[in-house]
Length: 403
Image 1 (tube, helix red, strand yellow):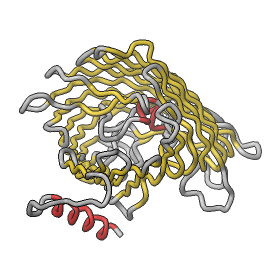
Image 2 (image 1 turned 45 degrees about the vertical axis):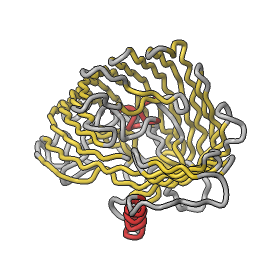
Image 3 (image 1 turned 180 degrees about the vertical axis):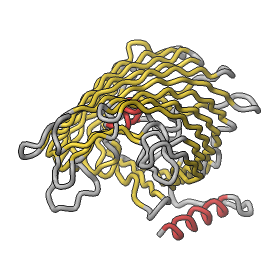
């Protein structure tokens, strides 16, 4: 399957750059664009087709804080993400198809949106983002840090199958949807999730933006842990460096709920973000509940003077478009914290870490609209009541090509 998709993308790209000729149509005139990817659309706007994708090649070096082997260091070079995407519209219907090429391959998004009511009321069906939280709603291509913050990762709702009503004006953005709780559940029971988010922009003009929002999600299903990675995904054991609480084998929770508050600002080349999350897993059949709460504070400065773009439609920050030949340079700092609790004295619950904080310092170089190079330093501190404190450092780098 991956080979066929790659062949299709390559063939299309080469066809677009083949010998010059005449494009004819039995309908409206066709406009072809090759800047930022290959796109074809009719002059009347009724039909469009665009091929895009992303590749993120990461290098991580870390000292193994909260690894399975205490104090073990590690390093790795791997593809964090590799996706190919096709999107467009057919009159009043838009569509997105995105496929993950890494590991064994999987569908990332596959959905269609009814556009007939205008931008203030869109209806999306299929596998899609639920849109819970500012950092998680934004694309992984353009998050300021290489990895999302601890609380955003802990309460990530992922891409699930469902239906979502959403829309935006200059002042507000909203979404409310019903989804299958977990995309990979296969026990023939349709566990559901309800997720909503509302954002208001009291200031949104002349390059100055103030963003305030709140969200809520409630989910049925089987949940066995709550936690997040410590700002690094790499090494031999990509999931060991975590702070989390988890049930012992055979025990689960049957419901999860979480809410968040978010605030952000765009002040020319300076951008600010902050979020707070709080949630819990309700234990099934007398099993203790698991709880978590956390926050992050982030500030960035684009030294070369560009502004970070912002999409009203999803209420999230987007790419930085360099103005000069040398590209755009950005520096940032983020501090985040996550606490997990519940059943502290219960033999049914194990803790890898109960409290964690990370400080991330980074530099992003937007070489062109399609190429980004990132370098992050991460310092993590954790605490487990039974075993005491632990801390560590990591250095991560990324080469990204997105079109």
